[in-house]
Length: 123
Length: 106
Image (cartoon, rainbow over all chains, first blue to last red):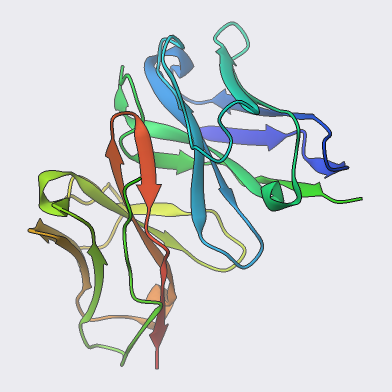
C-alpha cells in the first residue's frame, strides 16, 4: 500500500524558514517523480515544485522560485521541501504527491497524495 | 504562464449527468487529468490522460479533451460525488491546476 506521510509544518514568522519532509513507503521511491502541491485555506490546489525520479531535474512555480528547494534522499525514501524567506501568502496545507508514471523526468499526473501538513506564516 | 479556467460551481440532480469543463489555449494538444476532493480530504485522481480511469474509480466518471476544452462527465451522479473537482495539465515540467469546480448534488 502506497503511503506518503508529510511532516515539518508549523507556525513561522515572515522571513523565516521551514523544511518539510515526506516519508514514502509501499512503492519504489527512486522510480517515480514527486511533487509538492499546496492549498491555502478555502482555496484551490496550487502546484509548488516537482522533482524527477532521478532527482536530477527540479521544477518550481514562479511564486516560489529562488525561495524553495525540492530534493530527495533515496536512501531514506524521503522527499523534502526547504522553504526560505516565507511570506504570509505561503500559508497553506502542503501535500506531497507521487507521479503516476514510472521513471518520469517530470510530473504528469499525481496518483497518490499524502494527508498534508499545515504551514502558517504569521507574526 | 498557462491558465486553466473552470466554472466555480455546477449543480446536478441525483441520477442525472454532470459536466464540468476546463478551458485553456490549445488544451486539446495536452493531456488533462481530473481530481476529486471532498471536504477535509486529500485529492483523488479520477481521470488521467484525458479519458482513462484509475483502478477503483467508478465507470460513471469519464473524460474528453478537444480544441480548447476538456470535460469531466459524471453519469448517473450520486450524492457521494458531491465534491470539488480540479483539472490539471502539464507542460515543460511545470504543472497547472484549474481553479476548481464545486459540484453540488441536490
